[in-house]
Length: 284
Image (cartoon, rainbow, N blue to C red; front, side, top):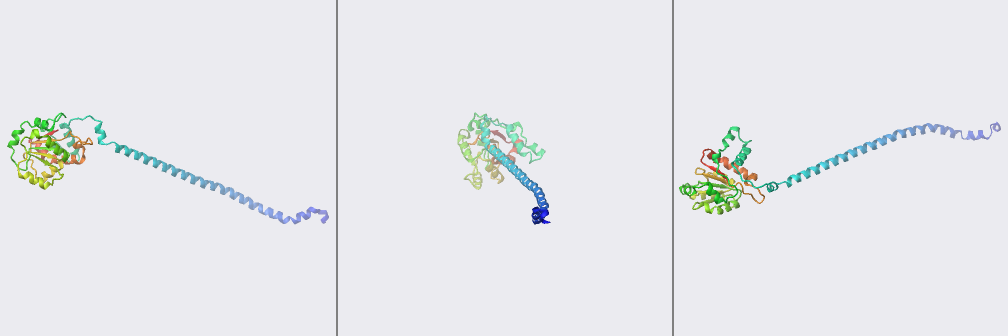
């Protein structure tokens, strides 16, 4: 029988187990291949999502960096544009009563009622002629106070002044006092500023004798009025050092702190006396 089946029978018989094993493993291999095929796209999907997220994150960071850079440049531009730059490009223009009136309106617009603001409005008769930028302080004062010699002789009250010259600093005040020698004659001028002079000392100085002219800063003048060391009862003229500019080309009203002090001084009694036609304001 073996001969009839030939050698192949023996061969197949010996390898029958191997064939069976091969046949058994084929389905497993196919399942594994299917699983691998299923897994591969999932892996690519994960990689794709991670890449997209990373890309989006990078775009957001770049956008934020660009915005920060733009904001920084914008701030730098704003910082570079100072009041000195603005003023240096403009031609000097003498101050006018309208300039002061506009300043008062802007300052008190959100602080006072409409009726109270109306009370602050000054008439044209409340102003002296303004400096046209051709005058020295002496020549200007001679023009706006033609009867000064008679006025200063008649003035005898203590703690009271006839003329206030309001400026931005102690150094400027000292210069103005020196420059008004030709105008003041025998009148006595006093420095009214905080630098190196205590307010108590100034009160005592004003109480000692008759003083005609006060030259100084609005902050110290306002403080003296509040302490009743300075009386406005005899006051006739208030001259604002309006056109003078410091090294940064700023006028007195361009410096926020000084402007606030000036508004306080004017509101503290001067504007009321202007409305009563007892005080006149000049812009030097």
